Picture (cartoon, one colour):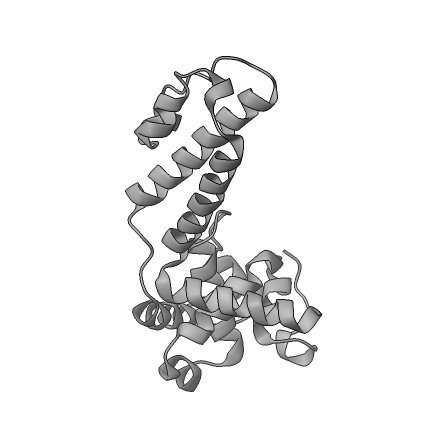
Length: 195
């Protein structure tokens, strides 16, 4: 990461600017939702850059990508890591918890199993893939069992719909209820604005 112009002197929200500074722009939407979920104490106690970095850290923990390093980011932005860590703790107390890791793992493995099943059918295979090993050990047994049936008896559209529904469930499980609602509301506002 390269030292950049301080975030508050540029156009854009503090979250957008800090995300750009730490090269994690993909977390902006979730981090903004994190701040909308957080208590007034966060806004009253921490400066905008500390709040933004704390929200980006929480967002990184609830996203698919790598976790943001608070230490490296604070060094880059020349801010106090203790203040950001305190902001993270304060934010996390006001945002609902994600689902347990086992539940998220089950959802991921089931989505992967459906994807493998659909891929085999699209390639014109008559038999389903063998879903064995640790990548499928907690996948939905009914999906794993579907691989044992002839693929021409499987409804691809129903499987795609089920996979989409499970993907939404996984996002809810990863983000937690409060954050999921905030991210969805933000996405709907953005969608209406673009029209």
